[in-house]
Image (cartoon, rainbow, N blue to C red; front, top):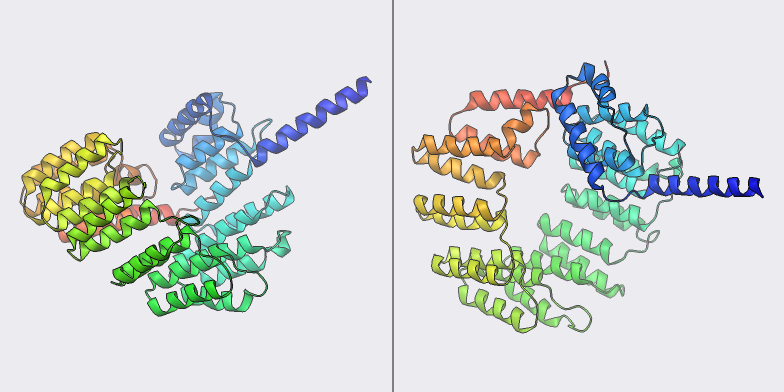
Length: 454
């Protein structure tokens, strides 16, 4: 009886450990505090003594702590990997699938592919591999135009004991389309669509890919093929098709698709209406934009921040700034908080009209209501530099540093996104600061090329 009891306890303990490895929960308060302490140590300790500093901290790691730290350092692959290797030596700790996936993403960002595949092999040994593992790698390869490597990753799934299914097929197509390789994605789709029966997600991926190409005739072909094969478009498909048509200047055709939607099966969303409103704004059809907004509300669909941003953009384009401030009041009364995009649309409109003082007033007000992004700061610095107000430009730059944007990120060994760095690069070139750009670029290159192992 005692043996059975102990055996049962051991089995339950094993199951709990298994579940933790495969499905760890959101970090608790204690885990977040521990992750914060570890982050401070990692930022303040040289790499050569990092293990010792972490050992001396006395912090006992758990899957949720490790996952949180790896998320914090997802753009600092070298540092993240040092921490990842240190945790492997800790007692009673095993990496979760999420930890492996985070580390694989970080290594791919700094193009440490050999070490990335070493982790995949480690996961295979522990029987932890799944479809998402390979989808992550496909996305990362495709993002840097390593198309053949992305396809290879899909092809070797069986070798690693993971079945190629529709989710993996969609993952490959998505990775290729998002990296502007829609023609390769279409080629693969045409070869394999009999092996993997396409669903609405498959067609939506291709539809979006051709939309971004842009190639409206091919997008229409995909939409027609989808309907002809009996695969019903879902709300995502409709949203993409409306967006593709609007970007091609076919807003009236897009409106026809919206009106053809069966509201009992697939009711238009706030996003779909926001695309229409945005396009009307671009075309200076302000009355149509307002009418569409009112029609949406009449149909019982509540406006979200994206819809309000589209309406604000339309009013800015029409130079109706009194209406812009009325919309902000309406947002406040309905509990819809503005975001950085809201701020940027208004600032761009004011700066375009030469109302720099009003733009600065709005900037100071908006940063109290929402978190500004790199675009916000870039816009303000550029505005002040062009107006010869360098003190104010520097003031915004210092505030940007205070908010831990680009300069601090690079100094601490964390790579900003390509998009963020690209915006700063354009600004520095325009302002004749090639010296600063060269320094930052050298720092960025160091972060990519720095070896992980001595």
